[in-house]
Length: 323
Image (tube, rainbow, N blue to C red; front, side):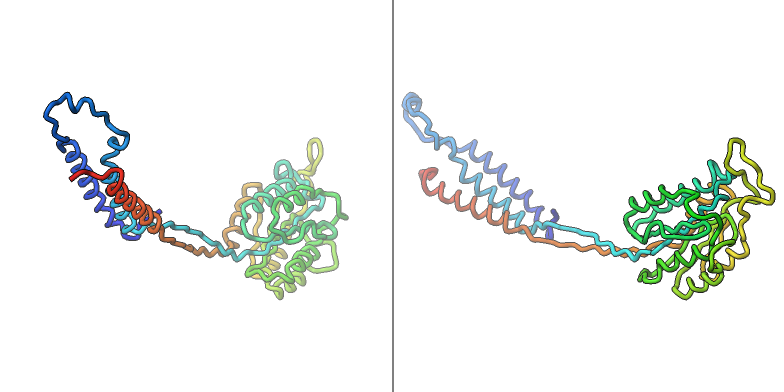
């Protein structure tokens, strides 16, 4: 609660001074004269006599409430409304066998899933979908704001569920198709792979041109160094590298759509890349503060009038003083 005219509250000091003066005056007031003290001792005090000062007390309380009413107490209800202009994001995740390489711990695939999950949990008002691919591509989760559902679908992705190969162009075309009808201010595909396009019927550059025509921006993320350890008891170093990233092709795909290409050689680098994408693709959130003020002066004013009327009634009847 606030007061529209709080300076009136200073007058409460005057009310307090009047209350103190009335209390002192009541203590010094002489009683009725009796010629013999014994005569007075035979008189018993009535119940009403104990409330002789009640009219004065009620009048002073009414005065105090009147001052509070003049200060205009108000109830303030403040609401903050947020209008978020979200981003539509489709993550395309490579599930080809080369993602089992253990240059990332425990392997590229598990780290890619974990970092993607961290990215999802860091968003607030963006719809996110998931496309998985190897030799083919399919939609694992459509665009959604239900991050719990999306994380469950992401956790359920496994390698070996799709035919072997790396269909980057098909994956990008599938992800862009999920954004075809999007009305979001920003439409993004995060394409993560550790290889080069060797499957599918769509060329990555053609898919990138189609994505650009739809207003989709592609962030291409390559994972892995020049070589990696394949899964197994001890691992095996693959000659020439496991799933060597086609940096030139991915760079061109990203640039055609106004995006960027990133290369991650370890888990921390991948986290930094997703953090950079989050920085580049932030939702626009507008806040508006709505303040509703309701005057409450009627309550103390009504109470003051009621107390004043009660004081006057008592002073004229039961608690009337003899002149």
